[in-house]
Image 1 (cartoon, rainbow, N blue to C red):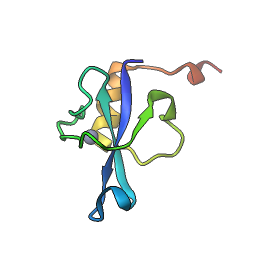
Image 2: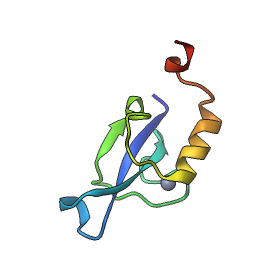
Image 3: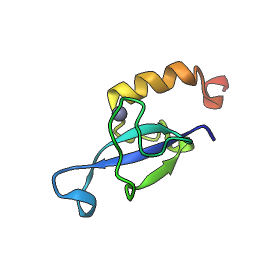
Image 4: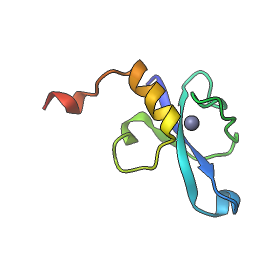
Length: 76
Ligand SMILES: [Zn+2]
């Protein structure tokens, strides 16, 4: 797995809702692809959670799609 999704929380912090999900490269779990710094304790989701309706950071989403040009689901 080359990427992970990581949570950015709203004003209430980790006890509140996730504001959006950033994409990080597995080797750099604290740095989102868009440049945002991710809290060490923020929730993570596997890359397979992509496309399941999560609110993804728009910039991370764009960059991610450049690195991962297609997903296996596109072959169906
Ligand atoms: Zn981002």
